[in-house]
Length: 100
Image (cartoon, rainbow, N blue to C red; front, top):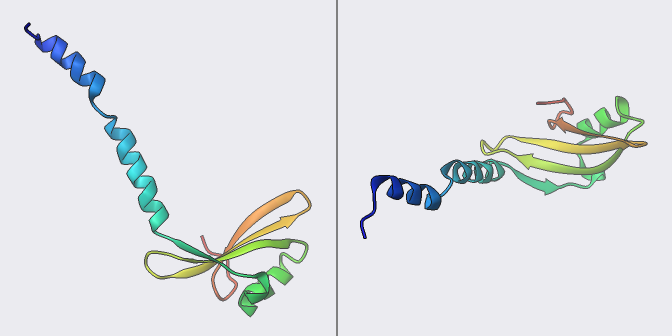
């Protein structure tokens, strides 16, 4: 039995893995590995962060907080807050200033 070039191409197309999907999955894993998150009790947040929360966000309740360390070892606090049915996430440095 002889396999023609067209038959070979069709066969390879059917068994070739989706390279784009593999690259996307690898990229997702890399992004996850760039940050580490450690839970922080709201009462253990730095005073400057608590001051920001009690000022501009006094009507909001802290639902959870994390100390996030980036791959360059810089850190910030990810604070999840809620007011009635509205939720939001703040990223604050140790001085209580918003960061991106």
